[in-house]
Image (cartoon, rainbow, N blue to C red; front, side, top):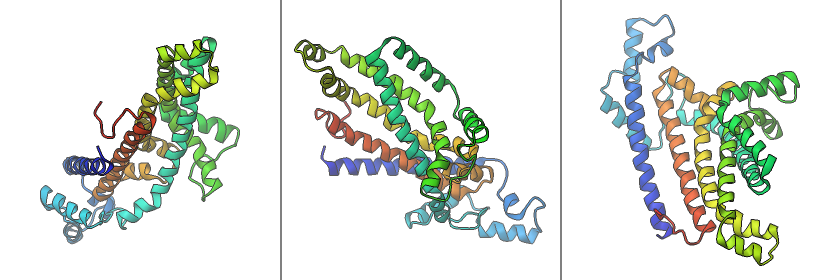
Length: 316
């Protein structure tokens, strides 16, 4: 498949996924109990005239399909809507918070790739107590929820030792990296443990291949065999898991951002759901879906560089 055909197919699939996702989310929010009027008018409510004015302004009494089609039309024009709680454009809300989430996910992805691949490869090549220790730590990391890890990191490194701040995303640059260090670590522990186990299994499988045994018998250097015959052929399952992991990190950031009080998309999504801020929920979820599809598309392209035998867009 040519690159143009592949991109066209991916774009069509993305549009279909966005349409189905938006319809499901919009429908679930529409059916949920409660009303956003409570957050607009306050806990005491308002006069009948105020309620009628707000209802007419935000079209809260319009039928479901009318509101949904109107929202789709605005989306096609690049308008993500207006937040009834924050009283500002949703695009401005997302633009002010997407940087925090992107930095958090990028740091977590780097930790996952370096730690997961290194630990898994070391466990497979060394064996013995190194393998047992790595497997035990990976099992602990997989079984511990991210919010528990986050609370433990805050207690030890922020409150106890005072090495890192307890909350917030910093003021930019190095300060942001320091503020996001603990959240990124909490977000990456379980995924790094899973990637380490996948890497270990893949490397062990490749070490038993006939071409690796032949290279060993021929007297090639062990380092050369590992780099060119073991690791390279192990990369396809590793990259697959790494890509899926990075794609799901954005959803996992919801919990971590709330634990560390970060002003990212995850914390924005939680508050918008609780306040039934339809436009914000829809826009944030669409951003998450787009990110997920794009990451998977990048992974498919990487396959062709890792193994030339894999055709772009192949189902095999």
